Length: 176
Image 1 (cartoon, rainbow, N blue to C red):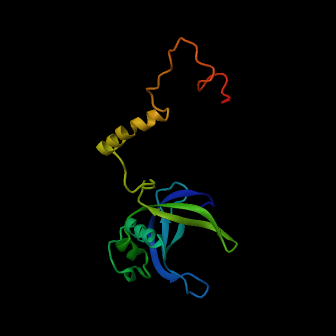
Image 2: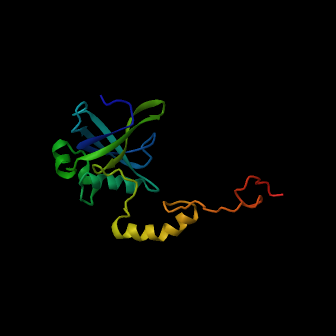
Image 3: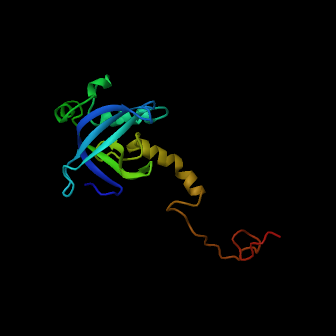
């Protein structure tokens, strides 16, 4: 059994089915992907299920991204219904990295799959800033950084004359 702690696991899909949320099935449509943990010395073959929701806001996009990360390239969700391990290997073939955390809902605590990521893909941005683009941005920000007192090129004052007592940073910072 997987431990009840925040963790990441590599896994492969071994099944898939659909349902609806809500007490009477009147809520959002959901896809349930069953996973088997792989490449883990202690928890190989352990199983956990992810519930992806098709709802308002960003949930549908996150769910479709998760399916895409699994390697699904179709446009008909019904082809994923009632998949067994063989069907999942064919339609959801890619190994993913599951981001899991402990969740309590309706007084039941369990380990929940929060995100289905590409392996090593848990970076926060979808649009990395690298290479020439990063160099241009760094050059653009250099003046702001120096103006804020940052940067390695800060120089300390070499003044030898005494500072006026009311000057900023003096020993008497009282403005009156």
